[in-house]
Length: 154
Image (tube, rainbow, N blue to C red):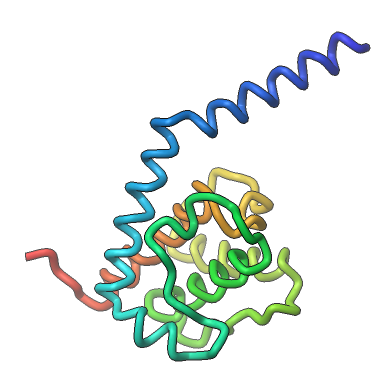
């Protein structure tokens, strides 16, 4: 029985090591940088940040690593809601800090799935408010918002 536990621990550590590889970290920074550019094209610095005092602009690497889970989760969910309003459903409700995180995540993923966007990761990966999965969701929503706004890279 101990052998199984040990092998499980090793597997978990190997997966952690893969998540922290330099090339994967670099890829996350590139995705985050592109996301920030897309958000600026969508005028989020004025439209999103001025919606409420708790909404603010973010640094280029804000969603790459988890540093303040509560704050990052709230910014992630409200930014996702803003992008959903711009791209999928203009009546989508903004989450509040006291809302159930599982319900909030479920609403965001349901909006993506309504556009036939496949989600291949467990929803609990979004609870940190940062990382690869959060960047994927925001980047996908930003792409949809740019398409909806008829933005062109001419």
